[in-house]
Image (cartoon, rainbow, N blue to C red):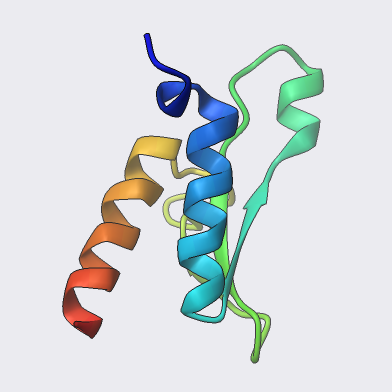
Length: 78
């Protein structure tokens, strides 16, 4: 496994992409403390509204979900 496949590396890369679009990736730390996988959601920096990962419940998006969503967002903006 290469370093770029580690979750921390993926998260840093996704945060840079999100930042270019004026977005922030949020992580549910409370869920991690309880021993479950922490979920994520994406917030618009200008309006502070959640734009992805809050349906069906808050912090419901996985890293894979967000990565796919950001790739689509990047493709649409090109």
